[in-house]
Image (cartoon, rainbow, N blue to C red; front, side, top):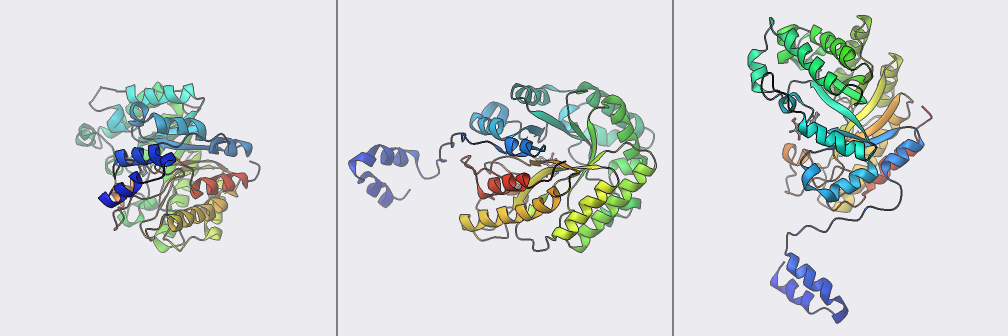
Length: 375
Ligand code: 9MR
Protein backbone atom coordinates (compact mmCIF):
# COMPACT_ATOMS: atom_id res chain seq x y z
CA UNK A 1 0.00 0.00 0.00
CA UNK A 2 1.39 3.42 -0.90
CA UNK A 3 1.82 6.00 1.90
CA UNK A 4 -0.80 8.10 0.12
CA UNK A 5 -3.43 5.37 0.27
CA UNK A 6 -2.58 4.55 3.84
CA UNK A 7 -3.09 8.20 4.82
CA UNK A 8 -6.36 8.48 2.96
CA UNK A 9 -7.66 5.29 4.56
CA UNK A 10 -6.81 6.58 8.01
CA UNK A 11 -8.59 9.79 7.13
CA UNK A 12 -11.81 7.81 6.57
CA UNK A 13 -15.05 8.72 8.37
CA UNK A 14 -15.14 7.60 11.99
CA UNK A 15 -17.53 4.72 11.38
CA UNK A 16 -15.10 3.21 8.88
CA UNK A 17 -12.02 3.56 11.04
CA UNK A 18 -11.87 -0.04 12.31
CA UNK A 19 -12.02 -1.33 8.74
CA UNK A 20 -9.49 1.22 7.56
CA UNK A 21 -7.11 0.27 10.37
CA UNK A 22 -7.50 -3.43 9.62
CA UNK A 23 -6.75 -2.83 5.95
CA UNK A 24 -3.77 -0.66 6.72
CA UNK A 25 -2.38 -3.24 9.16
CA UNK A 26 -2.89 -6.06 6.71
CA UNK A 27 -0.36 -4.56 4.28
CA UNK A 28 -0.26 -4.66 0.51
CA UNK A 29 0.01 -8.39 -0.10
CA UNK A 30 -2.21 -9.70 2.66
CA UNK A 31 -4.76 -12.12 1.21
CA UNK A 32 -8.41 -11.30 1.59
CA UNK A 33 -10.05 -13.31 4.36
CA UNK A 34 -11.74 -16.58 3.43
CA UNK A 35 -15.33 -16.17 2.30
CA UNK A 36 -17.82 -18.04 4.49
CA UNK A 37 -19.48 -21.15 3.09
CA UNK A 38 -22.71 -20.02 1.37
CA UNK A 39 -26.01 -21.33 2.69
CA UNK A 40 -27.31 -22.14 -0.78
CA UNK A 41 -26.71 -25.67 -2.15
CA UNK A 42 -23.25 -26.59 -3.38
CA UNK A 43 -22.27 -28.15 -6.70
CA UNK A 44 -22.61 -31.67 -5.27
CA UNK A 45 -26.29 -30.99 -4.59
CA UNK A 46 -26.81 -29.54 -8.07
CA UNK A 47 -25.22 -32.66 -9.55
CA UNK A 48 -27.17 -35.05 -7.32
CA UNK A 49 -30.43 -33.46 -8.47
CA UNK A 50 -29.59 -34.84 -11.95
CA UNK A 51 -28.19 -38.09 -10.50
CA UNK A 52 -24.64 -37.03 -11.37
CA UNK A 53 -21.75 -36.19 -9.06
CA UNK A 54 -19.52 -33.22 -8.67
CA UNK A 55 -16.19 -33.28 -6.89
CA UNK A 56 -12.67 -31.96 -7.03
CA UNK A 57 -9.05 -32.87 -6.61
CA UNK A 58 -7.61 -32.01 -3.21
CA UNK A 59 -3.93 -31.17 -2.73
CA UNK A 60 -3.00 -33.16 0.27
CA UNK A 61 -1.23 -30.36 2.21
CA UNK A 62 -4.63 -28.71 2.57
CA UNK A 63 -5.75 -31.55 4.85
CA UNK A 64 -3.57 -30.16 7.64
CA UNK A 65 -3.00 -26.59 6.56
CA UNK A 66 -6.08 -25.09 4.92
CA UNK A 67 -9.23 -25.42 7.03
CA UNK A 68 -10.83 -22.56 5.09
CA UNK A 69 -10.58 -24.51 1.83
CA UNK A 70 -11.69 -27.72 3.52
CA UNK A 71 -14.94 -26.10 4.70
CA UNK A 72 -15.80 -25.29 1.09
CA UNK A 73 -14.68 -28.71 -0.14
CA UNK A 74 -17.14 -30.20 2.36
CA UNK A 75 -19.94 -28.01 1.06
CA UNK A 76 -19.30 -28.29 -2.68
CA UNK A 77 -17.91 -31.80 -3.30
CA UNK A 78 -19.57 -35.20 -3.32
CA UNK A 79 -16.38 -36.86 -4.55
CA UNK A 80 -12.68 -36.29 -3.97
CA UNK A 81 -9.51 -37.34 -5.71
CA UNK A 82 -6.02 -36.96 -4.29
CA UNK A 83 -3.81 -34.73 -6.40
CA UNK A 84 -0.71 -36.78 -5.56
CA UNK A 85 -1.19 -39.25 -2.72
CA UNK A 86 -2.50 -42.18 -4.79
CA UNK A 87 0.38 -42.09 -7.27
CA UNK A 88 3.13 -44.71 -7.28
CA UNK A 89 5.93 -42.42 -6.04
CA UNK A 90 3.76 -41.51 -3.07
CA UNK A 91 2.43 -44.99 -2.25
CA UNK A 92 5.59 -47.07 -2.75
CA UNK A 93 8.63 -44.79 -2.36
CA UNK A 94 10.98 -47.76 -1.83
CA UNK A 95 10.80 -51.39 -2.98
CA UNK A 96 8.62 -53.29 -0.56
CA UNK A 97 7.73 -50.11 1.39
CA UNK A 98 4.15 -48.91 1.13
CA UNK A 99 3.10 -45.57 2.62
CA UNK A 100 -0.66 -45.23 2.79
CA UNK A 101 -0.83 -42.59 5.53
CA UNK A 102 -1.48 -39.49 3.38
CA UNK A 103 -3.99 -41.26 1.17
CA UNK A 104 -5.71 -42.60 4.28
CA UNK A 105 -5.91 -39.09 5.75
CA UNK A 106 -7.78 -38.06 2.61
CA UNK A 107 -9.98 -41.18 2.85
CA UNK A 108 -10.84 -40.32 6.47
CA UNK A 109 -11.69 -36.71 5.60
CA UNK A 110 -13.95 -37.92 2.79
CA UNK A 111 -15.61 -40.54 4.98
CA UNK A 112 -16.31 -37.96 7.68
CA UNK A 113 -18.10 -35.86 5.05
CA UNK A 114 -19.83 -38.76 3.28
CA UNK A 115 -17.85 -38.07 0.13
CA UNK A 116 -16.79 -40.75 -2.31
CA UNK A 117 -13.17 -41.06 -3.46
CA UNK A 118 -11.74 -41.95 -6.85
CA UNK A 119 -8.29 -43.50 -7.21
CA UNK A 120 -5.76 -41.69 -9.40
CA UNK A 121 -3.73 -43.44 -10.73
CA UNK A 122 -2.27 -46.97 -10.95
CA UNK A 123 -0.19 -46.86 -14.15
CA UNK A 124 1.33 -43.66 -15.51
CA UNK A 125 4.57 -42.50 -17.07
CA UNK A 126 4.96 -39.78 -14.40
CA UNK A 127 5.16 -39.72 -10.60
CA UNK A 128 7.01 -43.04 -10.55
CA UNK A 129 9.76 -43.71 -7.99
CA UNK A 130 13.28 -43.90 -9.40
CA UNK A 131 13.77 -47.43 -8.04
CA UNK A 132 10.87 -48.61 -10.21
CA UNK A 133 12.26 -47.04 -13.38
CA UNK A 134 15.66 -48.58 -12.59
CA UNK A 135 14.21 -52.08 -12.27
CA UNK A 136 11.60 -51.99 -15.01
CA UNK A 137 12.59 -54.38 -17.83
CA UNK A 138 10.91 -57.06 -19.98
CA UNK A 139 11.82 -59.76 -17.47
CA UNK A 140 10.60 -57.87 -14.39
CA UNK A 141 7.79 -55.70 -15.74
CA UNK A 142 4.82 -58.02 -15.34
CA UNK A 143 5.56 -58.85 -11.72
CA UNK A 144 6.24 -55.23 -10.82
CA UNK A 145 3.00 -54.08 -12.43
CA UNK A 146 0.64 -56.77 -11.26
CA UNK A 147 2.24 -56.99 -7.81
CA UNK A 148 1.81 -53.25 -7.27
CA UNK A 149 -1.80 -53.24 -8.46
CA UNK A 150 -2.68 -56.25 -6.33
CA UNK A 151 -1.18 -54.51 -3.28
CA UNK A 152 -2.60 -51.04 -3.83
CA UNK A 153 -6.01 -51.79 -5.32
CA UNK A 154 -6.26 -54.60 -2.77
CA UNK A 155 -5.47 -52.20 0.08
CA UNK A 156 -8.33 -49.88 -0.95
CA UNK A 157 -10.67 -52.68 -2.04
CA UNK A 158 -14.33 -51.68 -1.71
CA UNK A 159 -13.53 -48.10 -0.70
CA UNK A 160 -12.90 -46.34 -4.04
CA UNK A 161 -15.56 -45.70 -6.65
CA UNK A 162 -13.17 -45.50 -9.61
CA UNK A 163 -9.60 -46.34 -10.49
CA UNK A 164 -7.73 -44.54 -13.25
CA UNK A 165 -6.08 -47.83 -14.10
CA UNK A 166 -4.03 -46.29 -16.90
CA UNK A 167 -3.40 -42.56 -17.15
CA UNK A 168 -2.55 -40.75 -20.39
CA UNK A 169 -1.59 -43.75 -22.58
CA UNK A 170 -2.11 -41.95 -25.92
CA UNK A 171 0.55 -39.98 -27.81
CA UNK A 172 0.26 -40.76 -31.52
CA UNK A 173 3.41 -38.78 -32.39
CA UNK A 174 5.52 -41.44 -30.62
CA UNK A 175 4.77 -44.11 -33.23
CA UNK A 176 3.80 -47.36 -31.43
CA UNK A 177 0.56 -49.12 -32.49
CA UNK A 178 -2.86 -47.74 -31.42
CA UNK A 179 -1.28 -44.31 -30.94
CA UNK A 180 0.22 -45.52 -27.68
CA UNK A 181 2.68 -43.30 -25.87
CA UNK A 182 6.26 -44.51 -25.66
CA UNK A 183 6.56 -45.06 -21.91
CA UNK A 184 8.69 -47.24 -19.62
CA UNK A 185 5.70 -49.61 -19.39
CA UNK A 186 5.32 -49.87 -23.15
CA UNK A 187 9.05 -50.44 -23.59
CA UNK A 188 9.11 -53.20 -20.99
CA UNK A 189 5.87 -54.99 -21.81
CA UNK A 190 4.51 -53.77 -25.15
CA UNK A 191 0.85 -52.78 -25.57
CA UNK A 192 -0.12 -55.73 -23.36
CA UNK A 193 0.72 -53.65 -20.28
CA UNK A 194 -2.79 -52.25 -20.47
CA UNK A 195 -4.33 -55.73 -20.49
CA UNK A 196 -2.26 -56.75 -17.47
CA UNK A 197 -3.18 -53.62 -15.54
CA UNK A 198 -6.92 -53.86 -16.14
CA UNK A 199 -7.08 -57.56 -15.31
CA UNK A 200 -5.04 -57.04 -12.15
CA UNK A 201 -7.30 -54.20 -11.03
CA UNK A 202 -10.44 -56.21 -11.73
CA UNK A 203 -9.09 -59.05 -9.60
CA UNK A 204 -7.96 -56.84 -6.71
CA UNK A 205 -10.98 -54.52 -6.46
CA UNK A 206 -13.82 -55.70 -8.69
CA UNK A 207 -16.18 -52.94 -7.52
CA UNK A 208 -14.14 -49.91 -8.62
CA UNK A 209 -15.02 -48.58 -12.08
CA UNK A 210 -11.94 -49.23 -14.22
CA UNK A 211 -10.94 -46.29 -16.39
CA UNK A 212 -8.51 -44.90 -18.94
CA UNK A 213 -7.96 -41.22 -18.18
CA UNK A 214 -6.78 -38.98 -21.02
CA UNK A 215 -6.17 -35.32 -21.87
CA UNK A 216 -6.00 -33.36 -25.12
CA UNK A 217 -9.23 -34.65 -26.65
CA UNK A 218 -11.26 -31.44 -26.33
CA UNK A 219 -10.88 -29.37 -29.49
CA UNK A 220 -11.48 -29.61 -33.22
CA UNK A 221 -7.80 -29.35 -34.11
CA UNK A 222 -5.78 -31.93 -35.99
CA UNK A 223 -3.52 -33.26 -33.25
CA UNK A 224 -6.48 -33.63 -30.87
CA UNK A 225 -8.58 -35.33 -33.57
CA UNK A 226 -5.77 -37.87 -33.96
CA UNK A 227 -5.80 -38.43 -30.19
CA UNK A 228 -9.58 -38.98 -30.20
CA UNK A 229 -9.33 -41.40 -33.13
CA UNK A 230 -6.50 -43.35 -31.54
CA UNK A 231 -8.19 -43.51 -28.16
CA UNK A 232 -11.34 -44.91 -29.74
CA UNK A 233 -9.26 -47.43 -31.71
CA UNK A 234 -7.42 -48.48 -28.55
CA UNK A 235 -10.66 -48.91 -26.60
CA UNK A 236 -12.18 -51.05 -29.35
CA UNK A 237 -9.09 -53.26 -29.45
CA UNK A 238 -9.03 -53.64 -25.66
CA UNK A 239 -12.71 -54.59 -25.55
CA UNK A 240 -12.30 -57.02 -28.44
CA UNK A 241 -9.57 -58.76 -26.41
CA UNK A 242 -11.83 -58.95 -23.37
CA UNK A 243 -9.84 -56.37 -21.38
CA UNK A 244 -12.15 -55.17 -18.57
CA UNK A 245 -12.04 -51.42 -19.22
CA UNK A 246 -15.32 -49.79 -18.20
CA UNK A 247 -15.06 -46.04 -18.56
CA UNK A 248 -13.10 -43.13 -20.00
CA UNK A 249 -11.94 -40.13 -18.04
CA UNK A 250 -11.92 -36.89 -20.01
CA UNK A 251 -9.49 -34.71 -18.10
CA UNK A 252 -10.82 -31.46 -19.62
CA UNK A 253 -7.83 -29.22 -19.08
CA UNK A 254 -9.44 -26.51 -21.18
CA UNK A 255 -8.06 -23.27 -22.61
CA UNK A 256 -10.36 -20.25 -22.67
CA UNK A 257 -8.28 -18.77 -25.48
CA UNK A 258 -8.84 -21.79 -27.76
CA UNK A 259 -11.41 -21.06 -30.46
CA UNK A 260 -11.74 -24.57 -31.88
CA UNK A 261 -14.35 -25.75 -29.39
CA UNK A 262 -16.83 -27.61 -31.58
CA UNK A 263 -19.83 -29.01 -29.71
CA UNK A 264 -20.78 -31.34 -32.56
CA UNK A 265 -17.32 -32.91 -32.62
CA UNK A 266 -17.31 -33.26 -28.84
CA UNK A 267 -20.79 -34.76 -28.64
CA UNK A 268 -19.90 -37.24 -31.39
CA UNK A 269 -16.74 -38.28 -29.54
CA UNK A 270 -18.67 -38.92 -26.32
CA UNK A 271 -21.34 -40.80 -28.26
CA UNK A 272 -18.63 -42.96 -29.88
CA UNK A 273 -17.27 -43.86 -26.43
CA UNK A 274 -20.76 -44.60 -25.15
CA UNK A 275 -21.52 -46.78 -28.17
CA UNK A 276 -18.70 -49.07 -27.06
CA UNK A 277 -20.69 -49.62 -23.89
CA UNK A 278 -18.38 -47.44 -21.79
CA UNK A 279 -19.18 -44.72 -19.24
CA UNK A 280 -17.55 -41.29 -19.20
CA UNK A 281 -16.36 -39.12 -16.31
CA UNK A 282 -15.06 -35.56 -16.57
CA UNK A 283 -12.08 -36.00 -14.27
CA UNK A 284 -9.85 -32.89 -14.12
CA UNK A 285 -11.76 -29.85 -15.35
CA UNK A 286 -9.96 -26.51 -15.24
CA UNK A 287 -9.69 -23.61 -17.69
CA UNK A 288 -6.45 -21.80 -18.56
CA UNK A 289 -6.74 -18.06 -19.09
CA UNK A 290 -3.16 -17.15 -20.01
CA UNK A 291 -4.32 -16.17 -23.50
CA UNK A 292 -6.76 -13.60 -22.09
CA UNK A 293 -6.34 -10.00 -20.89
CA UNK A 294 -5.74 -9.21 -17.23
CA UNK A 295 -9.21 -7.82 -16.43
CA UNK A 296 -10.77 -10.20 -13.94
CA UNK A 297 -14.38 -9.79 -15.02
CA UNK A 298 -13.44 -10.38 -18.65
CA UNK A 299 -11.41 -13.47 -17.80
CA UNK A 300 -13.97 -14.96 -15.45
CA UNK A 301 -16.76 -14.51 -17.99
CA UNK A 302 -14.72 -16.07 -20.79
CA UNK A 303 -13.62 -19.02 -18.64
CA UNK A 304 -17.22 -19.66 -17.59
CA UNK A 305 -18.65 -19.42 -21.12
CA UNK A 306 -15.94 -21.71 -22.48
CA UNK A 307 -16.47 -24.37 -19.83
CA UNK A 308 -20.23 -24.10 -20.21
CA UNK A 309 -20.04 -24.77 -23.96
CA UNK A 310 -17.73 -27.78 -23.40
CA UNK A 311 -19.81 -29.19 -20.53
CA UNK A 312 -23.14 -28.73 -22.31
CA UNK A 313 -21.90 -30.78 -25.26
CA UNK A 314 -20.45 -33.53 -23.05
CA UNK A 315 -23.13 -33.72 -20.36
CA UNK A 316 -25.82 -34.04 -23.03
CA UNK A 317 -24.87 -37.73 -23.19
CA UNK A 318 -26.44 -39.87 -20.44
CA UNK A 319 -23.25 -42.00 -20.31
CA UNK A 320 -21.50 -39.13 -18.53
CA UNK A 321 -21.59 -39.89 -14.81
CA UNK A 322 -20.25 -36.70 -13.31
CA UNK A 323 -17.67 -33.93 -13.18
CA UNK A 324 -14.61 -33.26 -11.07
CA UNK A 325 -12.46 -30.15 -11.31
CA UNK A 326 -8.69 -30.24 -10.73
CA UNK A 327 -8.93 -28.26 -7.52
CA UNK A 328 -11.80 -26.21 -6.13
CA UNK A 329 -10.24 -22.79 -5.60
CA UNK A 330 -7.88 -20.60 -7.59
CA UNK A 331 -5.71 -20.34 -4.50
CA UNK A 332 -3.76 -23.29 -5.88
CA UNK A 333 -3.54 -24.68 -9.40
CA UNK A 334 -0.84 -26.56 -11.31
CA UNK A 335 -1.49 -24.13 -14.18
CA UNK A 336 0.39 -21.31 -12.42
CA UNK A 337 3.59 -23.36 -12.67
CA UNK A 338 2.93 -25.03 -16.00
CA UNK A 339 1.43 -22.10 -17.94
CA UNK A 340 2.27 -18.91 -16.05
CA UNK A 341 0.64 -15.76 -17.41
CA UNK A 342 3.00 -13.32 -19.10
CA UNK A 343 1.72 -10.51 -16.83
CA UNK A 344 2.54 -12.54 -13.71
CA UNK A 345 -1.05 -12.56 -12.49
CA UNK A 346 -2.35 -15.86 -11.11
CA UNK A 347 -4.62 -17.89 -13.36
CA UNK A 348 -8.33 -18.11 -12.48
CA UNK A 349 -9.13 -21.66 -13.66
CA UNK A 350 -11.40 -23.04 -10.93
CA UNK A 351 -14.94 -22.60 -9.54
CA UNK A 352 -13.99 -20.57 -6.44
CA UNK A 353 -11.61 -17.62 -6.38
CA UNK A 354 -8.58 -17.42 -4.12
CA UNK A 355 -10.78 -16.06 -1.32
CA UNK A 356 -13.19 -18.97 -1.79
CA UNK A 357 -15.98 -16.94 -3.38
CA UNK A 358 -18.08 -18.57 -6.07
CA UNK A 359 -17.11 -17.38 -9.56
CA UNK A 360 -18.97 -17.36 -12.88
CA UNK A 361 -17.34 -20.76 -13.54
CA UNK A 362 -19.16 -22.11 -10.46
CA UNK A 363 -22.48 -20.95 -11.95
CA UNK A 364 -21.57 -22.39 -15.35
CA UNK A 365 -20.91 -25.83 -13.85
CA UNK A 366 -24.14 -25.68 -11.82
CA UNK A 367 -26.14 -24.71 -14.91
CA UNK A 368 -24.52 -27.36 -17.10
CA UNK A 369 -25.28 -30.04 -14.49
CA UNK A 370 -28.87 -28.82 -14.22
CA UNK A 371 -29.22 -29.34 -17.97
CA UNK A 372 -27.96 -32.94 -17.95
CA UNK A 373 -30.53 -35.52 -19.16
CA UNK A 374 -31.74 -38.38 -16.99
CA UNK A 375 -29.02 -41.05 -16.86
O1 9MR B 1 -1.64 -31.35 -10.24
C1 9MR B 1 -0.72 -32.42 -10.09
C2 9MR B 1 0.61 -31.91 -9.58
O2 9MR B 1 0.44 -31.36 -8.28
C3 9MR B 1 1.60 -33.06 -9.56
O3 9MR B 1 2.86 -32.56 -9.19
C4 9MR B 1 1.69 -33.70 -10.94
C5 9MR B 1 2.64 -34.90 -10.92
O4 9MR B 1 2.19 -35.89 -10.06
O5 9MR B 1 0.41 -34.12 -11.35
C6 9MR B 1 -0.52 -33.09 -11.44
O6 9MR B 1 -1.77 -33.64 -11.83
C7 9MR B 1 -1.85 -34.16 -13.14
C8 9MR B 1 -2.71 -35.41 -13.08
O7 9MR B 1 -2.17 -36.31 -12.16
C9 9MR B 1 -2.85 -36.04 -14.44
N1 9MR B 1 -3.33 -35.10 -15.43
C10 9MR B 1 -2.61 -33.82 -15.50
C11 9MR B 1 -2.54 -33.20 -14.11
C12 9MR B 1 -1.84 -31.84 -14.17
O8 9MR B 1 -0.50 -31.99 -14.55
